[in-house]
Length: 295
Image (cartoon, rainbow, N blue to C red; front, top):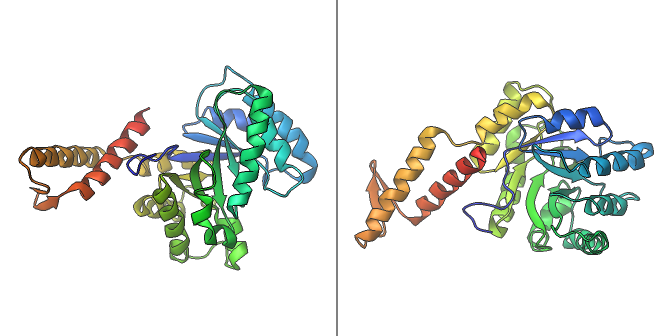
């Protein structure tokens, strides 16, 4: 993992109920970079087992193509978490687990050990990766230990609805009230070489409020954002994809710095500004994002 190109970086993550085969199929045909089959909040207790079976069957369809697939399992200490995790490990193909309400390294260690055994039992070669949903005050407070808990961890995601409840804050609080939490998650992710994904805007429309939240997350440095409606996918992809001008600028920065190094200069002037290795790191990140968008 490097600071230039976080492992698992994605732009749009479409969350869809794991209990609805029609919606899953529609999501898989969408332009989302990743679909998240939700076994937690989108499924009532009485439907947990049936939804798990449906998701397991979907993961077992070797002919499926399209976005990356992740499964939001139920939280640790619930009656369903262990069965959800085992069901994901028991199927072939690339899959990632989104673990909700991660509050400590222990939560990830529990899933890590469970996956070790489940993968061995299933004869699985490709390990299941894990994404941590940070959506409680305890999770925010323990970010340093969380990011170091397991090599399976690829991504930190900030979840606003549950985090608002945990903090005693209104779910529709102004965007600026989330800056500290966003910076905490982003800094922890970057320090550990992980991807950082912003949580969903709680409205289903791609309206002005939604656009403001997306723009803010992109400007802060997040790699992508969760969405809860297919109509939100395209504007998110556009917001997190470098423009042609940004790509051109990034290439110019690297070329100028390479020329400077050939002349034994650590910093060079480009367009009236000084360019050094710190600027080059940002340029490489832009090019990595652009390459990922084309993949």
